[in-house]
Length: 446
Image 1 (tube, helix red, strand yellow):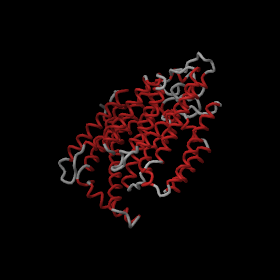
Image 2 (cartoon, helix red, strand yellow):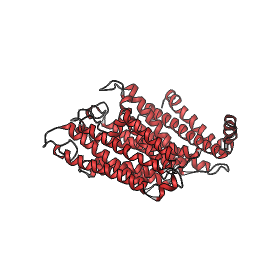
Image 3 (cartoon, helix red, strand yellow):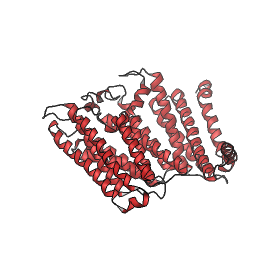
Image 4 (tube, one colour):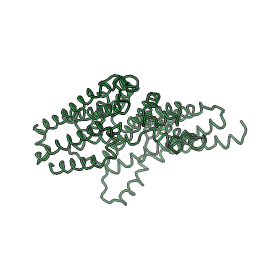
């Protein structure tokens, strides 16, 4: 290899590896980093607790792991791509090299008295490497290729659209078990909840991309879904597969690194269920909407496993399943109505026909009434008396919930509902007013 490419591409890699090696010694141990993190936090807030200092130090140190290996992977990718002649294999070899160095780094730390080697840190390092390679990939697509867009903007914007960031609001369901248990988390608990939401958002985005890839042909026949990046040809299948792998790996790696194993197991179960839905279940009538409702309920179950001592109520699970089942039926109703008014017309990529409109509407309303009954039975249980001082106020949630669901179905019947009721609610003032009203009722009951 000529000397100039060696200096330009490989010397930065060697220097950065050397810095990581030095940092993995006693110099950047937890004992030493606490000497400046602790005083800095006490300067900001003299009343800060030792537990808060420990949690902040933990987050800072793990973020440092992610950052240093993101940079290392980016440097390795640059070196392999520009001077190694590896072409499309450069990204994979860069990741493997970064992962091997992460294992060596942890092995090295096991010999340092003030450090310990941990497989969790290897997972975090690998997540950082994936992040670095993802940023390189986005940079390459966004600035070195000619982007194709159906609505303006370059490839980066299309990738952001494919990830469906509006859908991330659904992951607020992870907070429900904690809120309904009337528990106030510590600073460390808040950090874990934030990590859980980020992990679920990344993992779910991977599932959305996979579903859009598999639904590409069916989306072309839909008046709105045909504008999705993959259906419109703004993003290639190769980019989609890359996104699925990167987003899923990042979400799962973050969960394994900082959250309980049960949460990671539920996240993996969510991934298996979404894959089964995308590959087959979405074409089976009724089973498809049951799966969608179960996926929303899984978020609540996962939220109960972020922090210790939080139980998920059977009432909450029953209500959430029936509530989201009604919304899933409303979603299908809107899709069937949008597609065609002919009784023989089949919804593309699904197992429904236009003649099923009444059937879907009946089951949707039945699910809504079932959710209302669960609230009523819960308000009559002994558990309410122990959690609320004025539980009678909670009966006001019944008309609020049924009026909101009734409005969703009324708009669906008139053809004015977005394909996803949750996305529709985010732009609907009445939905916000309903949420505020329920929050006020809960405060009055407490």
